[in-house]
Length: 394
Image (cartoon, rainbow, N blue to C red; front, side, top):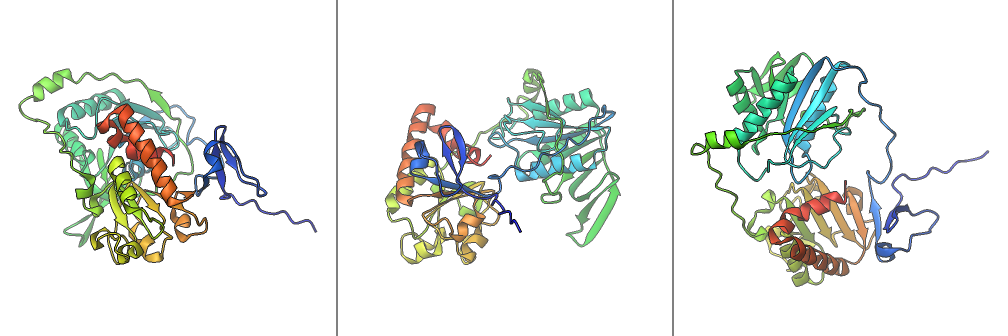
């Protein structure tokens, strides 16, 4: 009897000048970075089966999803909102995605049939009048049956409420249940459950929809021109953007940090690690072992007996990944592990694992980040630090 050996879809690969190369039969690549680093990826390492397009029929109805981009991508909450609209759309319904800010993601893979990108809007800026006028203009052009936005505190929830008030539209907030006919939300301090018909504006609560879809959208990019000069002059005096006060990342509480570099027992040169954090503009975390050894103060400890963090990017240097530590990073969006042990528990949690010496990797990253800051300017480098890390995982 012939036995076919199953090929592990998560088998390691190396990154070479020619691109991604699988490691098979004990043979590895030998070009560029692959000489010193073996990169093991999970999840994104294997190619998923091609998904079919949700519909090919002519659109007779539109569902509009609006959200702000963060460093060129939609966050989990926004992707869930887009998935919710795509899941309730029928064969003659088109899902249009309106993105405030630069968007470099794959709109089709997220379920959108059309993409309207407004790169002139920055999530770090506050321009509610301009955003309302832009959303109103898109609604006028496409006449959507329903408008969906994430119900968050970073711009989308505010915009949805402003639009509903200005348009006199029916609205449901903090929606936790959704289908083509109804929505539902908790009321009275979560002591009651309110159900109603699908309103014109839906503000979806986080984690109400699974963002992974069994299909893709058409992903057509639409060129849209928006002139906010008139609305800006009209709003002058009523709304003024005071900007964002930049502070040292070391002063940010770990629970609020968006970018964290964390050290474990494998980090021997603490000053070099701290220089890397400063160069990247990242907050500093540590494992319990590193804290118990006196390398870091107790307020830096991450894990079940320390802090629970929700960073967009979490880079762990020399951390094996005890279950208590993994519990503390379970809500992080992207986890990158740097470890000499490819079988360390953290490698199973990480989206990307770099099999290399922590000290050498810290030195290389510090040099690369410093060069990027010099080339682009300090502010641009700080803003793009996590974008570079997320780009490696895209």
